[in-house]
Image (tube, rainbow, N blue to C red; front, side):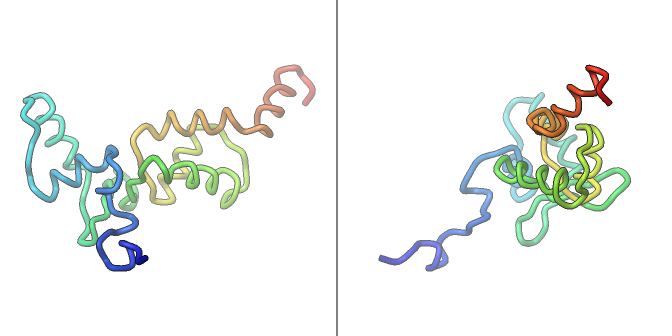
Length: 138
C-alpha cells in the first residue's frame, strides 16, 4: 500500500488540510474573492493589507517595526511559545514580554496575547514563584 503523500497528491504543510484563520487571507490573496457580506468584505480588504503570500504559499504578516512574521496555525503555537519561553531565552517572563519575544523571532498568529497569557498561567515554576512573592517569602 502506497502513501498518498509519497505520490505527490498531498502536501504536509498545506493550508487546505485544516481550516484556520490563515485560509481566509490565503484564499483572498490567491483569488481576490470577497465574502458576500459587506461588513466582512470591508474588514477582509482592510486586514489583508497587513499580510503577504509567498510563492510557496506561506502567509506572512507585515510587522510595524520588524521583519515579516510567519503566520502560524493553531497546532504550531504551543511549540513556539514553549521554545521562546523555556528554550531559546531561558527565562520565565510575563505574557506581554513573551508576545514581544515571539514577534521578534518572526512569528505571528491571531490571539497571541490570549495564548501567551494562558501558557504563562500553566507554568508551574512561575506559579510557585508568584505564590512565594505574594506571601512575602522572597
